[in-house]
Figure 1 (cartoon, rainbow, N blue to C red):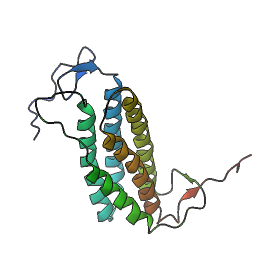
Figure 2 (figure 1 turned 30 degrees about the vertical axis):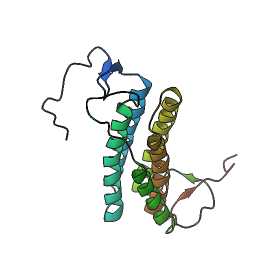
Figure 3 (figure 1 turned 180 degrees about the horizontal axis):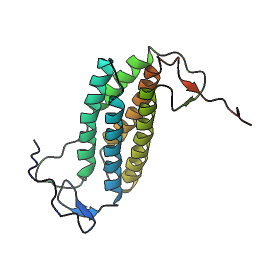
Length: 189
């Protein structure tokens, strides 16, 4: 368990930050960008949660996802080749499988897609779409990091599934897809 007794440490005042294995890297390091974007994803999901209303199932799922996103951040924060003092926390296949089950069960309740969907509709849906786009950015950064350094492949799989889940959750929030805002190709030419 993490115990924080002091919020500021002054260790990052020179523009670097510590990784989970104790090494220091610049705050603009790709690894830091990746787990920073995961943190942004978590914050956007927290914001979306303010608009859930009475959907306790979705609230529980988003709460679990937020917790899992801290696992994703911790995984990314500790390089694969490192030998930290404590065993690193790694995202598991079970966490990815959970998202897949949520996608499948949610998608069964949705109307069929007839077009691409514009991010919008109800407030909750708009926030979930925003969280989806932030997740996609994190996914791109994680993929780039994975090309340069060894990472746990489950992290990338998790973020990929998360963006898919947020898409179907947004459709669910739009009255099970009935209030989706559809793209009309060339509609304004």
